[in-house]
Image 1 (cartoon, rainbow, N blue to C red):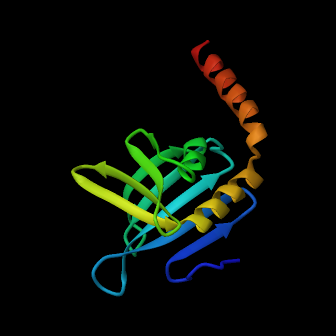
Image 2 (cartoon, rainbow, N blue to C red):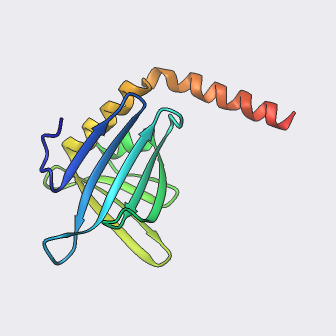
Length: 144
């Protein structure tokens, strides 16, 4: 179900993955790029941010902790050079610089909140501790 402008923002919800797609516009009426935020059950602590061309070729890829994404909905946060903060007009701005190019994207706050809520349905926040424990155990086995 999508109650945002279908030409601007779309959320897809599967049992093991949620995707937020935002069309990015330049000077003309057609989108110049797309921002994809993807949360997958197999990587429960991370949200993958990708800027893609309209043909869906990935131009930039960044990883953001789900916890940082949640904080960025109410106040400024930064992780590994990716910044997120609420701005005027009930929007959330995500920005970073890569290879000399600055990327700044604004998405509707309601869409970001719904996307985050779907991620909590896929892997509840209470299960993050178990995930971290499993990852630590895997790392210990790899070193052993």
